[in-house]
Length: 314
Image 1 (cartoon, one colour):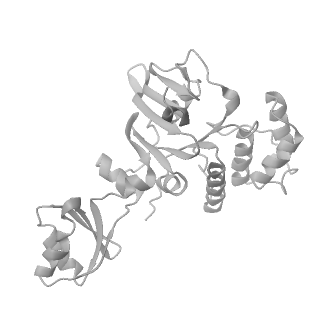
Image 2 (cartoon, rainbow, N blue to C red; image 1 turned 120 degrees about the vertical axis):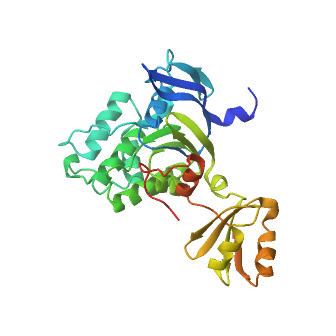
Image 3 (cartoon, rainbow, N blue to C red; image 1 turned 90 degrees about the vertical axis):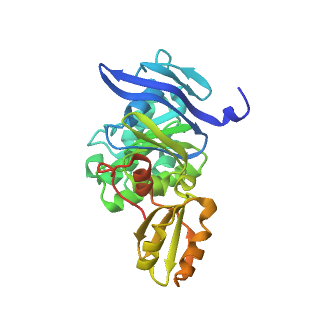
């Protein structure tokens, strides 16, 4: 393999999973480079969890293959799980054991490290002060953070988090998001599976968007949202400007957005917007390249409102 491929921790080609007549994952090909937070985004039922199961070797594909850490497997083989941590569903902890004792128990089962690692992980997830309290007294956010500490036992290179903020209140969501960001900044590769648009946009550097088991798009989040064909305008008369711009042959769409205009225009014609408005006595006070929200981007590529997705970020 070439030098570039050595930076990939996950590479799938034509990955498919069928359950009878139902196609849960359909011919899915995507790659994840080492380091940072990579988002698998899609509504419930889009194939995210099934995809993770196939990557982990827990679900046997109906077709295609996975290359993980440069080693292929197709369901008959298993990846090197010692290098992987995962929360695919909420981990089951013993309610009357403390957080520290729960981690020691699972550490002993997996032969992962020593007692010093437990202290390090509890500090990492900000549970040192609550380490010796019974698990059943933890808030939901604390339980989620203990689950992430559990997934980090053995210091894995690759960490899968499947819907880690489900059911949390806003404070708990913020805590877990901050933790995920810090983990991704430390050189580890985090795969975040989520149906929350805001969560992915705030936490992930790169993303793959799935719908009905198919890959719609993948790439850097900022690059996907910074479309050259959308400019933001503020003029001396936005209502009149909108009526003029929408009739220009090189303008696809004009929308009101927080007191400004968002104009879909071919990149090589964007300069003509100001000329067309000036000819009608309307002058541009501000013009900038727009970065659309992830929700608006989802609408652009699917043509439908993502009712099952939540949390638009402006």
